[in-house]
Each structure stands twice: as C-alpha cells, then as structure tokens.
Image 1 (cartoon, rainbow, N blue to C red):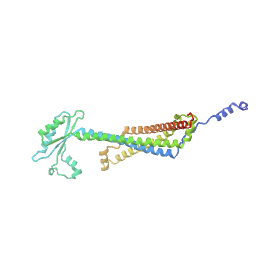
Image 2 (cartoon, rainbow, N blue to C red):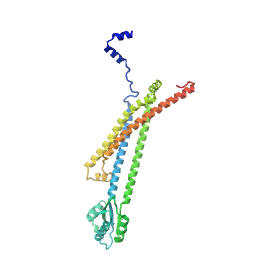
Image 3 (spheres, rainbow, N blue to C red):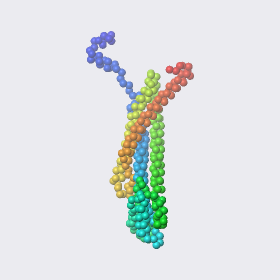
Image 4 (cartoon, rainbow, N blue to C red):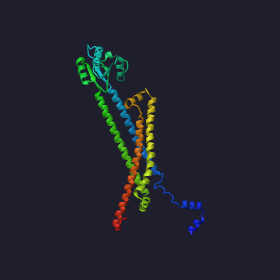
Length: 336
C-alpha cells in the first residue's frame, strides 16, 4: 500500500517525503548555556587574567632589569674622599686622566658642585655648601661594554697615584640585578604554574559535575554503542567554547590594564609618583612581545581546558565500564 501511494505521488512530493523522513541531527548532550557553564566562564576568565597579568609583569620587570644592567655596565665611578691639605680639583683631574689611559674607556666626567648638590638634595635638602661638608667628589667614566678595561689594574694605579680615590665598577649591583631578575622570573613561573593547576582542578570538577548531571544520557549513549571518544568529543566542544570565552575575557582585561597603566604614566610625566614608578618598574609597556605572550597564554588556557575535559570524560566512562564489569562478575553474568 505504501509502495502504491509512493508511486501515485509526484517526484517533488516524493522528495519532500524523503526529506521529512530523514533523521534530525542529534542535539548537544550538554545545554549550550547554564548556570554552571557561566560560572566556569567567570572562573576561567579570572585565571586567565591572573596568568596574563603575571606574564606581562614578569616581562616588564625583566626588561627594566635589563635596562638597569645595561646602564650600570656602561659606567664606572671614581670617588675621591676629601682630606686636609688635599687639592680636590687637581686630584679629580689626575684621577680622570689616569682612568682614560686604559683601553676600553671612552670619556670621563667630573661632577661639579652643582651636580653633587643635586645628588644630595633628596637627603640633605637644597642650598648646600659643599665646602663646609666632607662630601666625596665623583668622576663618572663611560666604558666600552664589549671591551671593558682592566678594573683591577686601574684600581691599583689609582691607589698608588691618588690614595684618596676609590674605584667602583658596579659589579655588585649588576650581580644583584641579575639575581633579582632570575628570582622574579622564577616567582612568575611559580605563580603561572599555580594558576594553571588551579584551573585544571576547576575544570576537572566542572566536567565531573556535568557528567553527574547528564549521567543517564551518557550511560544510554554508551549502552547503545557510542564510544567514549564520541562522548568526550561532545564535552570537548562544549568546554572549548567556554574556555575560549573565559580566556579571551581574561586576556583582554589584562591587556586593558597594561594599556591604562601606560596611558596614566604618559599623562603624568615629571610628577613624583610617575618618576618613582618609572624608577622601580620602568615603563608600563609590555611591547608587542608581551601582548603576543598574552595571546599565546589565552590559546594555551583554552587548549588546556579542552584537553582536561576530554581526559576527564574518558577516564570517567572507563570507570563506569569497570564498575559495570565488576558488577557483572559479582552477579555471575558475563560482561558485555
């Protein structure tokens, strides 16, 4: 009868009937949006913000420490202490000329009374009379970073010719800066590691919660022949969308923080607050490499979240199969 009815239908009606008989695509196992998913987006956004902020701060501090190290390495300082009967002007000129005889030195500058007073102004105030105070005088000698002079030989010569002179090559400060930069990097890596661990644990709990809420659907699908990879793929797509939304929000927020900080610094140049912040942290600009690192962190967080969800689903389904197998052996029913 059905065959007769189909023969009586026109070709266009047959196509419509076959189209209506097609199976509709299966809907998603998990709802596209729910309270748990929105909460997870917020958590991932917070984690991504902290990770990107830490990465940008480490990059900024490393650049500042490198700038400090370069500036310090380009100069050495000769300090001459005042003594009774010492002709300070002659001693300064002699020490400078002796330093410039060494290969690797470029030029020497004697800090005059005004420059010395400006250096002491933050501690002793303005209007100083250096003739009434036993203030050491300084000579700044610029050197070739790639071909530095023999500091020990220069130190010995100055000690012989100008006993009041003391050479400071800033090696101690450079070593401290290098150590500080390394410590900062290690702290930043540790913070990033803790953020990623916390995020992985959060995703694991969220995935297990989603599995528990949809366990009957997962078991039915698995019972009728759906492989664990298929179910994991469905969860993977769901958490991939969530992780991209969260990581993008956190990364963009961190980028906005650096942009606003740089804008504030550019608008408050020559103010005490800006000068102190610049002296400690340098410019609040992470550069294109920093923003590229933030983008890479966003992608990494999204992929890590997706991979964590997939592994959690596969592990949970394997546990379900193991429990079913154990229950079958206990009841004397062959598993399968």
